[in-house]
Image (tube, rainbow, N blue to C red):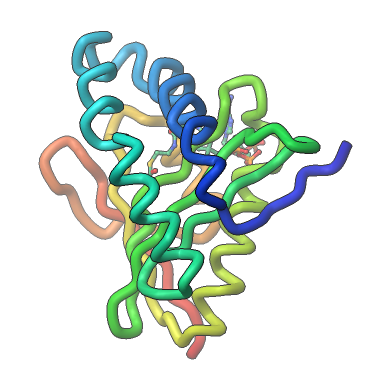
Length: 161
Ligand code: ACO
């Protein structure tokens, strides 16, 4: 079944939190402690916070929040925040069993289509220095390392206006 990419809805909140939890446990298993991961998910992915951001995206405000679906199952998501003509890629997470199948690229491409339509000329992101899969993915998709911020690489990609 092909992957569908679409804007997230209010009813996707619980599934999104589960995808985030699975993805974090997998991606950061050798980087952060279990305790850190569980606390992070509980705090940063509270239903209230995620719902607020999904609503901002539905209203075409400063957030782009898209999900990838296998039939009706949420398999991953991407979230970006825009300000003026720049954007920050805040989150891109897939269920581990759906990685390495081109879905991350599909999510990014759709976000880029929306961003460029809205006049974004630069996108920045922060990725943990030990997240080799993430870094490799972003480099293959046109992002360059521009600096270091604590444990993170700062990566950027420019777009034609
Ligand atoms: N092993 C090695 N490289 C991988 C793997 C893997 N299991 N999965 C993806 N990649 C990288 C490689 O560069 C690969 O290129 P290759 O096929 O030539 O080896 C490329 O990604 C493949 O691209 P996609 O299939 O489109 O990538 P995917 O659908 O897996 O999406 C993503 C990439 C989002 C990083 C996904 O692997 C994932 O969810 N990882 C865990 C969460 C994560 O680390 N997210 C980024 C956090 S940073 C942030 O959100 C700003």
